Amino acid sequence: MEVIPMSEGEQLGAETTSTESVRAETLLEVDGLKKYFTQDSGLFAGVSIDTDEFPPVSLGQDYVKAVDGVNFEIRRGETLGLVGESGCGKSTLGRTILRLLEPTDGSIYFKGEDLATLSGESLRKKRSEIQMIFQDPQSSLDPRMTIGQIVEEPMRAHDMLDREGREARAKMLLEKVGLDPHHYNRHPHAFSGGQRQRVNLARALSVEPDFVVCDEPVSALDVSVQAQVLNVMEDLQEEFGLTYLFIAHDLSVIRHISDRVAVMYLGNVVELADKEELFENPQHPYTKALLESIPVPDPRDRGARGVLEGEVPSPVDPPSGCRFRTRCPDLIAPDAYELGGGEWSHTRAFMRAVKRRTFEAMTAAEIREEFFGGDLPHGEAGKIVEEAIDHLATDRNGDDADDEESRWDEATDLLLESFAEQSICAHERPEYEIEPVYGTERHYAACHLYR
Ligand SMILES: Nc1ncnc2c1ncn2[C@@H]1O[C@H](COP(=O)(O)OP(=O)(O)OP(=O)(O)O)[C@@H](O)[C@H]1O
Image 1 (cartoon, rainbow, N blue to C red):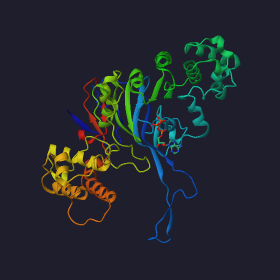
Image 2 (cartoon, helix red, strand yellow):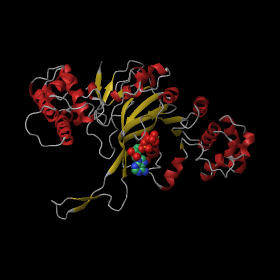
Image 3 (tube, rainbow, N blue to C red):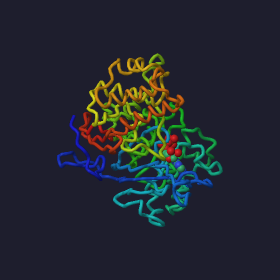
């Protein structure tokens, strides 16, 4: 497989060669975007005490790195799906693009203009061109207003049309989203969840936006209603030339609606490719794990689910290098030891098992047999493994006074520091381009396996 490293600042999905077919115009380009939140603002938040220092109390601040250096572009008329587990930063990214949240760093070019630098009236004007729809159609519609008033509200805020013009446009849009315009004077409670989301769509479209950020718009709806709303969204996209950033955690929804898909993990985009390429030829171990964890309809197939092990690390102190490395089944062997493939996979599995304490303490020989088939890796790596086993074995040497808890901790620290922290995955943030198998769209994968 041919792999082309990305140069710094290069944009995902941007055009490279004149031989490529002419691609649609870029509508939105996100460059190095970061959004950090300050952590709890309790009384002692950010205060740290170090008695070796004078003064012993210092004021530092921890940040939740919700979005941490994201680059991509969205072309006019396309749908870019954004998928990832809960808490990976999808909503924060969407809201920061809209400037509902203040970016910490980076640029958001919309039709060539950097939204991150706009404020006041110029930002307000731009806002009509970018709209957002949210997950919960119930709480985002004011129950005291009629749906006519709801759809007209953004037009009033942007001084668009006169009263009759707004009413005519609201009725036209209600019809476009598949509602009866005669229901203009009804209140939201008279509508089902799917119908309320249609009202939301009509409201978002009232000010003629070019770009709509859709944040889990169908997640709260019954599966049978989801497809109907997605189809309406596709029809509206075609009719009004809309561009969507479509946020969802549900891969089947993403597959239905997207042209290209970006996969997010812990504040980073880890893979971005054409939809077919991403689903049929996923390259990042995180994407593969996500796809393999799609629930299988056949209940007898339960074994095929859930390959994502371990906890998502805290976004306050995310792993260095590749964010996924602490859970990655393909962590790369450190160069320092010249480990053979089998030796490394045994060592990696042992390190994982010690870290997660997935086995009961046993004798040194039993541990060697269980994890290494009796043969430890050769050289320095073998000595380190031997030392770790010595911490854990029930028949260990010496009069080790440490309690069991701290012996597991010592073995874990030794293995992580000697192996996991020495891997290229811990040292460099990966950014690579892969030759696609399906189509000609560029395929980005943030994984050192493609270095
Ligand atoms: N206002 C805030 N203050 C502090 N931390 C926040 C704030 N909003 C979000 N976060 C944190 O930022 C991270 C990303 O959250 P975000 O809601 O963007 O993720 P998500 O992928 O959209 O998840 P979900 O699908 O559950 O909404 C999380 O760790 C979250 O706790």
